[in-house]
Length: 321
Ligand SMILES: NC(=O)c1ccc[n+]([C@@H]2O[C@H](COP(=O)([O-])OP(=O)(O)OC[C@H]3O[C@@H](n4cnc5c(N)ncnc54)[C@H](OP(=O)(O)O)[C@@H]3O)[C@@H](O)[C@H]2O)c1
Image (cartoon, rainbow, N blue to C red; front, side):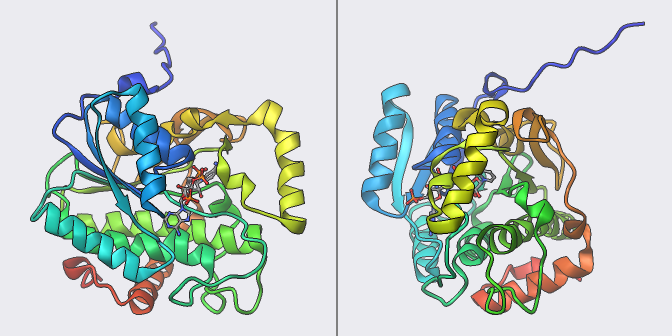
């Protein structure tokens, strides 16, 4: 009897990305930057929207140091401001008309904002940045995505989605605000629900575009530096305890996203995370999707509410029952 040997998936396994165009949000830092670096190595053309032109330019300079001649386009996008999301999408469509995009990676996010803050549009900052902004961006760019196998939309979620609860009476955290467990958890659960519901709707209209999701485990990035005060202290304690045994660098944290984005083995609606130490570190494998994310009635309600809040429509996908 022969036993199959498990070969951990690494960035070396990524096929050529020559001729493919990619948008990655939050690519000036952490996991997004590492994702951009690996796709640039493989020849993709990457649009990197950051919160300021200088952050995007700096990210591009750092990638070109390792990949001279990388095809990179600097852009500006603030997911906490829907007018910025609309303006970015409009500039994209003007520059690259018709179906011109192979891959959209919704990676950008914030975690554990210490006190309740609002986005420009009046959404709770984590729900707005991590979920409603990417929801809007996806709706606006979907008509630009090539309707062909290989086209994908990747949503970067988090293990925090597992313990997050979706409370339709507290979506904007007006009644209760707990930075990490409740507000961040809810925003990341919403990401997982969105990724799966998007796939359900794409499948229903016969689209070959895939929606996949990923989480990086515990990767050392700027994300953990966000909190201050009590929550910052707790995060620092947690980091100090977990770091030596259960963390990984941002490059490893990017592997599940890269797998979800380009691995031929990724499946429609698939969710990928690290394989070791309670999904905190390691190489990408399929991981369980939170139960709530699999509840179609919750997903339909969230979708309708998100379209109402943001004012965007997903065209034919909006009509799917
Ligand atoms: N690191 C982990 O252990 C971990 C675990 C689970 C999930 N995640 C998820 O992984 C993703 C990437 O995070 P990371 O760890 O790489 O953190 P990071 O280094 O802090 O990167 C986050 C990126 O998101 C951008 N961003 C924040 N607010 C934005 C806004 N309003 N509009 C546009 N971009 C915005 C940041 O831009 P600025 O540089 O301007 O702030 C930065 O480029 C996030 O979705 C996060 O929730 C990370």
